[in-house]
Length: 183
Image (cartoon, rainbow, N blue to C red; front, side, top):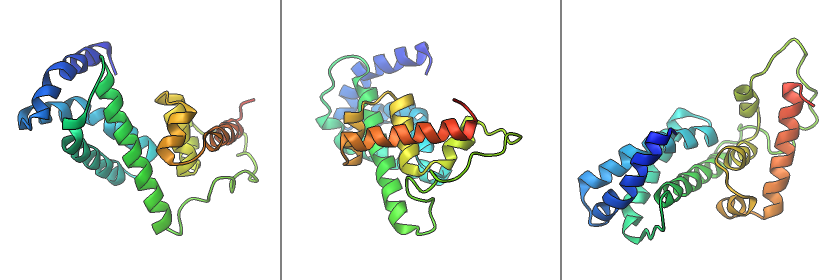
């Protein structure tokens, strides 16, 4: 996100939110337009498919529209944090639902640990390596390393313990180092 985008979102926090709280459709659309790219990007990093990310985008903004009257932001960026938290929660719920529905999904965490590293001639980029992680591990890595959530936040979002978040991150980092040939 550029500095200019952050500035626009900051103004949006003060003006459009108050109008959106009254049900103003134009203001709700402005909120959507300000955050749709960020939400889709976050959802795409956590979910496996574009379709899932698009569904998360829709679910997130349905929740934003339903709940914005109760939003009690404090300071610049609070709307951004609130929307990101809803998006992350919706994406994680989708991952959980999919895991139960799809028996042929990626192996559970730890199942890849015994695999040997890829051949030296095969260069994996970070995107490909992230896709090799289970959805749970990929979500923890993305939320912690990219979005900046704490282990406490991640544990709460995933309805798990803080130690679960820490161990998932440590294992995922180890796998990524192995797959990418790093120390």
